[in-house]
Image (tube, rainbow, N blue to C red):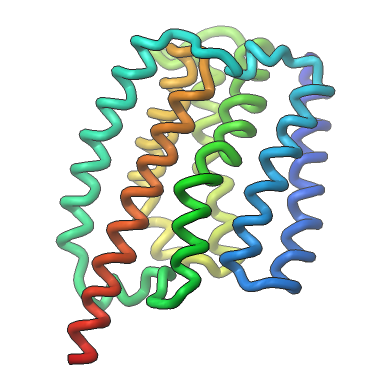
Length: 228
């Protein structure tokens, strides 16, 4: 794996994703589009890893350090619990701005966050991206490898795309920024010390799944109260 080869595969990934976004969001509703895009991302990343020269082991396709992975999952559950507590303090006005509405599409959204978000994002950002950087860039800052810091920063910045896709406002992006930075570093550090993609996927799935499920339940309850 060379740095040029690494950049070429990143450009290739986003080129295919961009084409799929333009096509899918014109043909189906955003919920189904995201679900299908998640599937595309998984298979595309597997294709890239296979032809990039990165070994499956370096991409985290092993059980790795099980003890370290389980410890990070437990720590993450505690942080998710704190996040839920903070969500309870969200005002009704802010809750209405959350783009998870009271419709049958919530089922598709829940399927997406519980089944696809973890694998689709972690395969690429931790498996390919961070796995490649661990080979290309050596060194660390305190206890975080440079590969972990770079991949985590990139993961946070790429979420600006949500603003361009109007899935969230820039104000919402800024409000979510501290949480995303923390979670991104946790995911990256988990991959770093466990050398496995399994545990970041579990953490990512639990984080998005529990948080979004709670938001949907809370918002639906609020809507029901307004109808009474």
